[in-house]
Amino acid sequence: MDYRILGRTGFKVSEIGMGCEGFLDKPYAEVEAFGDAMEAGGVNCIDLYTPNPEFRSNLGRALRGRREKFVLQAHLCTIWKDGQYKRTRNLAKVKAGFEDQLQRLETGYVEIGMIHYVDSMEDWYTVIKNGILDYVQELKNRGRIGSAGLSSHNPAVALAAVNTGLIDVLMFSVNPCYDLLPASEDVETLWDEETYKAPLVNMDPQRQELYETCQRLGVAITVMKAFGGGDLLSNNSPAGKALTLYQCLSYALTRPAVATVMPGARTLEELKTSIAYATASEEEKDYASALAALPKVSWKGHCMYCGHCAPCPAGIDVAAVTKFLNLAVAQGAVPETVREHYAALLHLAGECIRCGACNKRCPFEVAAMSNMEKAAELFGY
Image 1 (cartoon, rainbow, N blue to C red):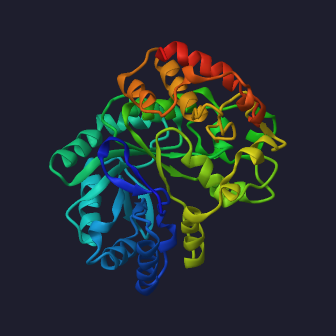
Image 2 (image 1 turned 90 degrees about the horizontal axis):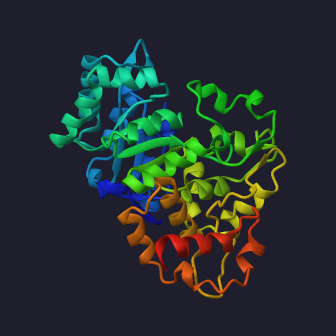
Image 3 (image 1 turned 180 degrees about the vertical axis):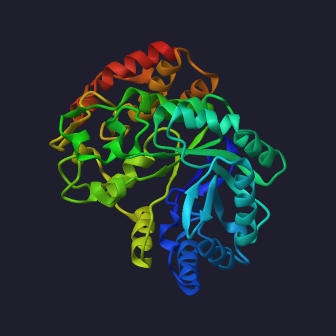
């Protein structure tokens, strides 16, 4: 398993995490088996959106003696009422729900305290007005949570939250279809068939801005819905053609700021299949050729950071240089962190020998050689 640093939090997380759907409605013995499989496979990051009390208690018991081996992404604002999950913005209920969560998980803290499911600007303002954002900061200051998070499907809301400087981790829906869609306060549009009837071309600029802003500010992204609820893996995919599980995982993991992807698993076999991504071949992970051939969507002219431009005869990591170029252009300046990361590359854009090999290899017809010229001019070498 490969690991990444969770943005500015400093926590180290596995590239493949675990959504909690696999634990629901399972007896303790099966939950323990899931915990064993995760530990054996190196999966250390678990998302805990559901307030189901049986789930929380079973997981807490399963993590006895190994709690420190896992990074828990726990959601605030989720409560259990009348035998089902509810979302709340009532501060007293948020506090009670969080304390119940810690007690059932048998822990005094969680690494990520996630403000749950904020998809509209009005709801974001409610989170602020009702004192929930202040409460999360209080928990962080008291060491009850290690970092402040927010989950959303709406790039406009996510950008507003990230730009406050108070959000350390963003849980966001990332996949090759959703990334083409403009912001919406109705999450249903992400998988509505009507949304995909007209041809979709290139990355939505606000989503690209979100990812690049997170990268620049050190806000880590934890990915949900990498498979679009399974739609992208089926012949009924909104893209017009099925992708593979590993292609979707690889796509998400190559987006700026992404630290971990959290697929769900209903069975141990599904969990082990996701874990096996770590040892999958580059051919199995290659999403670029598949995306370039999709009948309903197009990324023509947009760098996907897929690495198909390699190898460069001059040794330049063309995809990395392009990513740093895009980060700087989006900022309208060259942030010091971007400059430092660029300078740390073994070979820089100014070493381009203009052979054109990168242009010829790109499945999305990106003017890679031109990007090297722009990067050399912008960074000065």
